[in-house]
Image (spheres, rainbow over the protein chains, first blue to last red):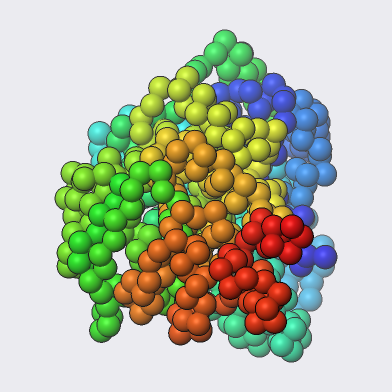
Length: 268
Length: 270
């Protein structure tokens, strides 16, 4: 069994669904809208509504909900950390106190809201990478950022960098897993001791990992050069982006849903 | 196809050259096996063919185009495709068909032609059913076949394989060799770099590299006649060659018999 399995962060799951067929630009803009809406949510009713929408989206895009949840696993610590900070550092009516630490009524509400907000952010953003191949995603981003090229913004380079980063996530997890196993087989102790000791114990994992990453980067650059890659100039696309009527409907639908949720939240 | 005239190459910061005074010509349609021990300069030579490296001395000509002229790089790389040892380090996209399309997209071809090339190349390597599959889900052999499809999508005249079978299991190796036989039948020039002699039995010419120089060049029959030099070249004899040698030592096989399955069968079971 792998140590680092079930990690789907940034992974694309091919399927034949209406969400998969949407133009990547439509999906990127929709996610931005959804994320803006999530940032505004406050009321528990809104949380339930967003949760139901998440389930609906999972069904509509034919991505099992379990896979969507797995994608959020790597950020659980970040969510818990953020919730913890709000729980202990928000001032208000004290519910519990222990030394310098105190939990307030407002802190509990804030921790709950921030934890859920962050979780929803990650889960909704996850749909973008789960339903859009990195190449489509990079084409979409490049197209959206193209107007900024005249101000010197490297739209193509940024998009290609992101494609490659997403492509190599599973490979690097495999590599880390292999190094971890090799170091454990040699008697490395990665699970015991304080934080400092554990961080030190990870140095023999990180050093070979960095060496491998640089080696891979060098090899990949040569392989891309050998396939006539010379930046975005003169490149064509196998599937050129075409904005369809369904994309307009999807975009409008997202706008309406976000508006309803936000209004519902404000009303509540 | 290739003409190397007194080619030397020294890596930046290195004292000894990786290649020194190499003279070599490869004709269209040949299947040339470049063999040699580790550090003999095989991979350096392969990268010169694709203009990934430029000779520090001498001339390297690909289809008459000098590789040290930057204006020729595009045309050279269009005509000569490369497949590297580790398929994971040459796959750019996350979906099979998108990776094959990467090269033709760089050439700026129209969408319809890219689709056509992608489909043809995936059929050629037997991956047409995996066209929408994520690349991370492929086996090692399938990944290398995908890398070959990506190289072939450029419609090159020559394919240079730099130890392309080194990381594969026996089945994966055989699959790749089958594709190479097929490509050679279609008239493609192949330059196969390997240190496994059992993989070069289809080559029309063998070039042995040692310490950055051409130690020997000739056909397969000539190579196996030089078997006393194998140790000196740092090469290991394939089991079939060792077997036929043992038979010849015991006078069970004529000295002139070549160590190929067909010849051995003809002599042992007439």
